[in-house]
Length: 343
Ligand code: PLP
Image (cartoon, rainbow, N blue to C red; front, side, top):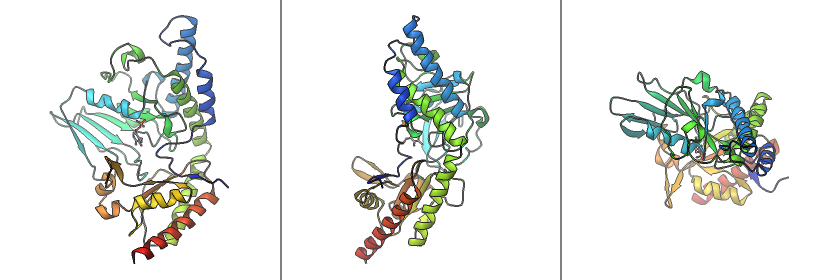
């Protein structure tokens, strides 16, 4: 029995063995991929292999993959499209963000395809003629089938550490022929779309993780994760029948459970479960020491009090049935204690 149970896979995932091995091998590659000599070509070959692996996992062409330091940097190109003012709005349903640039109407729309807090999957709304669409597929890649080619989007952003790769590396996917100004300028790397010598070690790890994740998805490992999530969800709702399971009944990531426990603060839940050996996260975000209610939950129609009582439990392959049932037992016992203290 493991003394710590990690149930925060939407925050980040454990590094996969395949990624670790690829990174260790890449550490001995001397060359700069921009150099033309044999050492440089070896580095480039490694990077191009990773590009093909990432492309296969997201359903795009290798030439459409631009490596970046992560999804946040990749999304920054949205700010460089030649359009007007930026508006960030919470959406009517619970997607991560809808970022619109206005001026002559909506010109570019950023859309969180699968929400990190609730796991809810939502297709983007209809867009104005000529508007570009950027999909944040960070939480979807490796967990549910997704094809950039079929999505109709001009751009997408991905992050390696959400599917078993290392932190600090990701990619911007740009449709062939769609022109974006690079967010980082300098050298002409990545076909002029992202300057700076590439993070070969991270990229090799990302490629290996993408390939392994795609294999796991095809083998049905995330359906097994989905079954465990459902077991956990019913154990929690039968142990505490006043809880609300956010997004239950709709299309959701198979691994995510967002639970509102009336009368018990999310932050306190996280601390109590941490002491009991479980890593989960609160549905609210903490910035500058101040806890803010989740915009996503508010946009879904929950009030501030409910939003502050949410936790997110996110599973991954490797989590066992024994662990989720133990989590449910401990959580229910702690909840009863918290309610009796409050009474
Ligand atoms: N988009 C979503 C949906 C996320 O969950 C995250 C990570 O928390 C990001 C973007 C940011 O990714 P990165 O850490 O690579 O910048």
